[in-house]
Every structure is written in C-alpha cells, then in structure tokens.
Image (cartoon, rainbow, N blue to C red; front, side):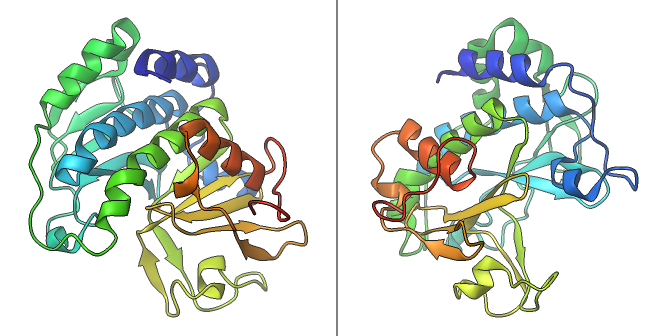
Length: 274
C-alpha cells in the first residue's frame, strides 16, 4: 500500500468520526481508543510510518505512539532512545514530535512544541509531495556505537511490522497499537499481565521492545524484531506462536496473522502456525 492509498484509506475510514476525548464520560470499554482527533490520529500513523520506513534502518529513528494520561492518543515521539543501547541517553523527543490534533494536524514540531511542518492539508492535496517535504526534515544520521545483539533483526523486520500495524489501524478504526507498555507484577481484575506471565518483565516497569495491538477486548503482543509473539487463546489463556512474524514473507501475511489473533478476520491456528 503506497502513501496515497494510505491517505485515501484514512480519509475514508476516519474523516467525520467524532472525537473521543479522554473524560469521565467516555465508557471504560472505549478508553483505549481515546484521542482528541480521530482523523489526525490516522494521518499521524501515515506520517510515522513514512519516517520509520525511511529512517529506522539507516539512522535508528523511531516514532513512538504516546497515550497521554489526560488526552489519550495525541502524539508520537520521534526518537532513537529505545532503538539501541548507543542512544539510551538521548532525550525522548530529541527529534521532535508528531502532534495529532490542532490546526492542520498532523503537525511536525520540535521537542518544545515549536512548529516545523503542518501536513493535514498537504497530505490531502499531494501525499507524495507532503511525505517528501516531511523526510527532508530528517536526513540520514547514520549508525554508531552499541546497537545491541538484536539490531540486525530489528533493522530488517521492524519497518515492515510498523507498516503492517499502520495499515491495520487505517483499515480498522477500532484498532490501536502501543510501543510503551506498562507491565505490573500484580494481578489486575484477577489476571496477570501477559508479558509478566511469559517472563518478559518480572517486576513493574515500562517495556519498549514489544508491540501491543488491541481491538475491543482482544489484544496481542509481539517483539519489535518479529521473533516472539503472544496471543490470547479461545480459553482466554495466553500462548506463544510456532511461526514468528519475522518468518512471514509479506506485510499482508503479517496483517493476516494479527487479524486472526484479534479475531477481526479469521482465527488463530494452533495446529499449524499459532
């Protein structure tokens, strides 16, 4: 799916959707969807995907979706901080932000909120030109230092996982994804966090090297390099998979697996790949 198709899909599925501000009036079952601007959210994923697709492999630049405790999904942080050990001490917004609401959203800003580029109108008028103007703000920075043992796999697979998640969000307005995941070591509503159960985090902490995708009451988790995945079974337990997302040949194949885990299209196949 090219950028023009992504923008058209965002407009078709999100334009006209009412805002879902995070407030006491928003039902608990819908709080995971909270965002001040539904279309800005969707177009923001298009922008974030373009940055990751162009600059993760050669510069480790990532775009982290952020769920603000007062506003819901309202921004992406443009950062290398969680990409590799070499960049762990960089500010979380060292490359700025993508703001998903306000005039002509999405908007590229510096870390202090100073505007660099507004993209809402530009994406509607000429998506390819808008993305070219966007990427001109982020020239290649190169790679250096300790990139970690998993870097070659992340470098290869993370951009296409990002594209798969982006396209699913554009196709299914009830689907969201997170890269900043809090894992507690205590049960919530009688259940332990799946990443705690599987030994990813054995004490309370934020986890940044996994994806969480959620649609309604279904969720799934997978590593940023596509080498480990956890989904909810029909018995409401949590299971790892046999065939990893990194082994899938195409973005569409990755999307089909995620849709099955979330029961949006099809179902998991524990006898074969799951």
